[in-house]
Amino acid sequence: MAAARHLRSGLPLLQAHLAAAESAAVAQVSRGLATQASKPSQKQIKVPEALYGGTGNYASALFLAAAKANSLDKVESEIRDIVAATKKSPMFSQFLKDSSVPKETRVKAVTDIFSEAGFSDVTKNFLLVLASNGRLKFVERIADRFVDLTMAHKGEVKVVVRTVVPLPEKEEKELKETLQDILGKDKTILVEQKIDYSIMGGLVIEFGQKVFDMSIKTRAKQMESFLRQPVDF
Image (cartoon, rainbow, N blue to C red; front, side):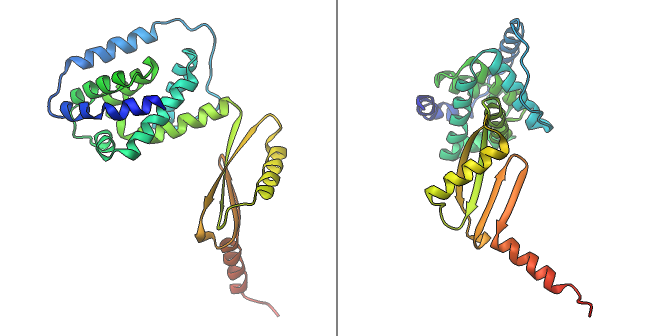
């Protein structure tokens, strides 16, 4: 997380660049991307799962670039640091979301801040593309989808369990074992517990595009619907 500290320390640069734009950075972006694209690929690399939409396309492109550079772990760490910085710094978050900031200003600020933070060329070039295309405001969503790809690549499955009280250790272990049988022994199950009083009891399990709703709230609604049905005698 050293990069995160450097990133926070570089935030004062942002204030300076918001006051003055330099268009020369645009040419640097083009040259940087052209240089990276010219490097030959030694092996065929594919994304582990298909993603759609604008953010999916950006996430897939970042995954391929990081994989070809053999730096998936480093890029993932840097992307997580960026998301963490947006949550800790309202100014940084506002800069990313403010579409009124001139492109030259965005590009120059991104170049300086992330170079100062010591980020990899893959991450820096990617952020420069987002800055040039006015897509920095989507960086959190792109980061989420990129992490989905890296987890799929590593055979990891994130499972979100919502309950009104934390699951006891024994029940969490049993849940993991059940999911392991369902998803396959080659998968690594990562359970994230979330407290959600709105479900009233029971639990809701989410992973991938699947949702298993065993909450009292849902059961109550189902019962209410059943009782409202006309009864034939």
